[in-house]
Each structure stands twice: as structure tokens, then as C-alpha cells.
Image (cartoon, rainbow, N blue to C red; front, side):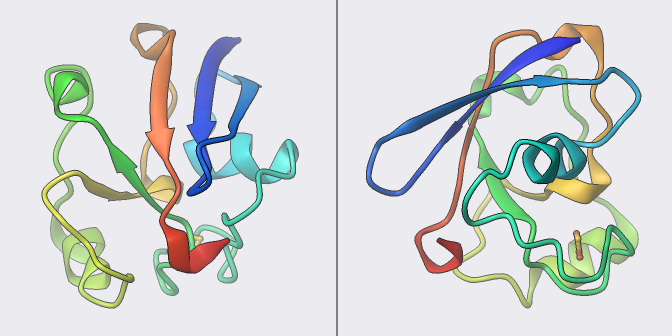
Length: 106
Ligand code: FES
């Protein structure tokens, strides 16, 4: 398990234990993190699992590609740090990862 923190728009923190090999979305949903609805169940078809991942993690987490990049255009206020959490697999290197939840999803 890897410890990951979700930051809500009001600044409150939710710490979760995420399973290595699972997705960030699954970790959020399993721990009832507010704002990660994941309406399509991880099929990369809804963008309701949109999160922001800080620049300092870019060396450990690949940039979005293909279908994810296309779907991010439908997310609320995407930026350079945007990811669809259903498309990011948890790795041991993510210990301590901090993720921001967009305001429109909570
Ligand atoms: Fe629908 Fe991630 S859960 S795109």
C-alpha cells in the first residue's frame, strides 16, 4: 500500500492507502473521497475523476496520452497538471503523493 493525500477545494486533506497496481481513482472511490465520481467506472469516458498532480511528481508519473488527453478536454478547467485518476496506476514510487481535487467536482 502507498499513502496518498487528496486535497479538497476547501483545503481539507484526505489520506488514503492506495493499492499498488490499482488506479488513483479506485483508491479515491474505495475511500469515498468527495469529488471523485468516476461515473464511467474507469473507462476513460467521463472525466469525472479529474485531478491535479503537482509538477514535482512529473518525473514519477507519465504525462497523459491518447484517449486520456482527448477526454481531459471535457474536464472542468484542465491544466498542465491534469490527469484522469482512472488512468494512473499506483506505483511504490508514489508514496507521499499529493493530489488536488477540482472545485467543480466536489
Ligand atoms: Fe470516467 Fe475516469 S472514471 S474517465
